[in-house]
Image (tube, helix red, strand yellow):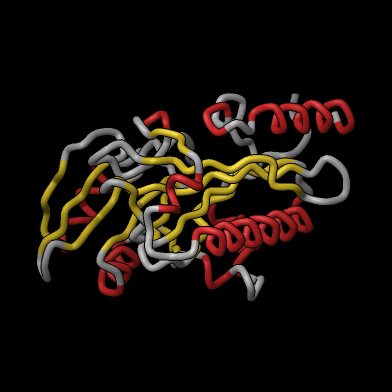
Length: 247
C-alpha cells in the first residue's frame, strides 16, 4: 500500500537538492541530453552517463567513455557489447538507440570504487516512522563484471558495505559516517519539499574516497534486498508500522 507520492523525475529531485550548499558538492554535473550538452560534457569529463529522466532497474542507461581525442566507446546497461564511434557521431548513435518521446539526461561519470575489479555503489533505505529519519538498511550493490550498472536486475550482487569498504585505502568507518550523514541530509531536504516517509538513496564512493549522490528513489524496492546483510527484519517491521500509521 502506498503511503507517499512518487516523484520519478531525476531532474526535479536534483533541482531541489542543488539548492542545499552541503549537498550540492556531492551531486555529479547533470544536464538535459542534447548534442550540445553531450559535447560539452565530454570536453570536461572522460566518462559520462546517458540515462532516462524517469527510469528504473538500470534500464536504458548508456556509458560514453572517451578513448582519445576523436573516438569514444559506448556501452549499454542491457548487454556487454561495446560500440566504438567518433566523438562527433556519439549523439546521433545514442538517439538511434534510445526511446523516442522520453527525456534523457547526461551526467558526469563517477569512477566508482571497486572490489576485485568490479565497481559498486551503495543503496541506503531511509525510513521516517515518526518525526525523524532513520537509516534502516544499507547494502553495497556490486556490479557484474563488464556491466556498467550495479542493479541485481542487470546481474549485480548485494554485499555488506563493510566488505565493500574494507579493501580500499581509506578509513572505512569515516566513509560509512559520511554516507550516513549525507543520506540523512538528503532525506530531510527532499522531505521538507515533497513530504516522504521512505526513500531509497543510491550513493557512491569514488576511487579517491569522495562520497557522491547518484539518485533518490521514492518508490524503492526493498523486500528482498537486505536479507543478505541481516537487515531485513528491521526494514520490514518499520515498513509495516509506517503503512499502518499513515495509509
